[in-house]
Structures are given as structure tokens and as C-alpha cells.
Length: 326
Figure 1 (cartoon, rainbow, N blue to C red):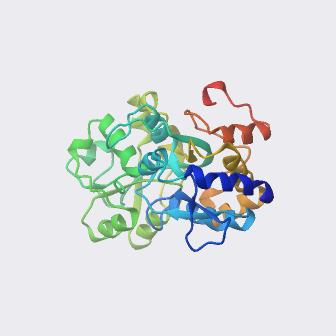
Figure 2: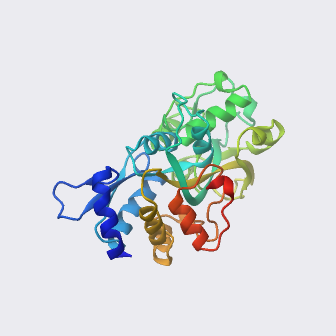
Figure 3: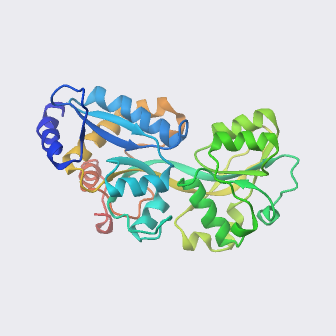
């Protein structure tokens, strides 16, 4: 695999898909992977990918790029600014339809590779809060994540679907900043879309008792699942302390994606490395949230097109790729 990559990588220098590293030795090339805000789950995966791949693939360097998150990555990968990136399946599907904010331009340059992990919506309030249902959010302040993040986009879609988005203050705060504001009493609730248990919520729960608001029941009753391809899930009891009960919610599917112009063989070889036994272990060691990533989970949750390199990889692994994903 290492020697086979050299002629492919050399050709990429002329296509612009790989960026040369000015101080690198001849034959070394660099790809950019869109992660997310510093310390976030996307960023941790991108960093783990940047550490692992160069150790197992000759002549390749990987740089984890900070970004606003899922929506930002769909746009940046489609434009070619990032070669690879993490995103949510719903954001990618909407990008293909030209329905992704802020400008609703088509993002069909972003192609899916594979499923990484599920990211449930989690609406967090203090245990003694007078917020007990989504309708109680009216007039409250809810931090919804960074601008450009999948969390913020999902909050706007869901609360907008329920007619609540314009009834709340919704500052765009990253999880760390939101937790500080939450503990200072400046905001009433946190909205996150990430694997559980989430470090930011744990940080808040250490200093004050918290509970989760049921968002799954209203999602189901309101037809939200008929409008967007989120999936129902129950967050287990005790996730954020022994007193926290099970809570109905919904999740999105976290994906790795690539620009359409990254050659088939490059995507195929990178996937072979990442989805190898060693690659999966390295990702899971970086954060246990990544444990669901496996050859078996494949392209779960993906409704937009797979990159040709991903089609080759998954078919080689025994998966049948539907025609509409090719």
C-alpha cells in the first residue's frame, strides 16, 4: 500500500488536491481534514486521523483544520478548501439539495465515505429549572453551539419546526463557552448534538445538578422525522449522574467525507488504513465516542452519494452499495 501510493500522490501535486509542504522532503504531500472547534469531538477525530495516517502511509502528511463544524465542513470540502472533513448526514443531504445555510448553494462536491458514530441531541437544564418541556423554552436563552456547527443547524431546524426558534434567545456559543455561561447563570439551557456522555455536560454536572429535556417525543409527534432524516434514540438513565432518568431524543449520523476530486485510489487507501484493525483501535483510543466506527456499520445513515473510493472499499468488504449511493 505504501509504495502504491507514491505515483498517485505525485500526480496529485498537479491536480491541486494535495498541498505541498514547503519544508518537506521531495515526495511528501499534505491533505487538509476539516475538524471543528478546538477540543470538540470532530476536532479530536481529525487530530487522531492526522497522527495515525502518516505513520502507516508513506509520502502523506495530514493537517487537521479548525472549522465551525458540520455545516462549515460540508461547504469547505465541496469547495475544495478541505480535502476531507467530518459532517452530519442530514447536513450533507441538505447540502446536496442546495438547502444548507447560510447561502443554500449546492454542495455536491462533498461525497460521503463512511459512518463514524451517532450524535444525539441533548437539551440540558439545571435540575431545579422551571423548564420541563420544550414549550417552556419560550422567553428563555438557549446556547445552541458555534455558528456553522451541526448542533446549531439541528437546533434551528427542530425548534423552527416546532415554532419555537423565534421565541427564544439562541446565542451561538461553543460548548466550553456555553458551559461557563450556563454555570454563571447567563443562559437557561444548553443544546448539544454529540455522542454521550459529553465532556461539556459532564463538566457542568460536576458543579451543578442537571437534567435532560425530552426532545424525542415532540420530534415524533410533530412529524419531524418525516421531514428530516434524524433517527429516534433513548439516552440511558444515569448518563449524567445517578439521578438522571432515561430521556427520549433523536440523533444524526456522523460521517467522514471527501471532496469529489480526490482520486478514487487515495480515498480507497486512506479508508483501508482508517478502517483497519489498527486504525479503528487508534480512533477508539483517541475517544470512546468513536467505538461504533467499524467495518460492520459501514455507511449507516448515508443518503447522499458515496465517493467512488468508498464504493470500492465497502464492496470489497462485502457490503452491497445501492445504486442511488453510487
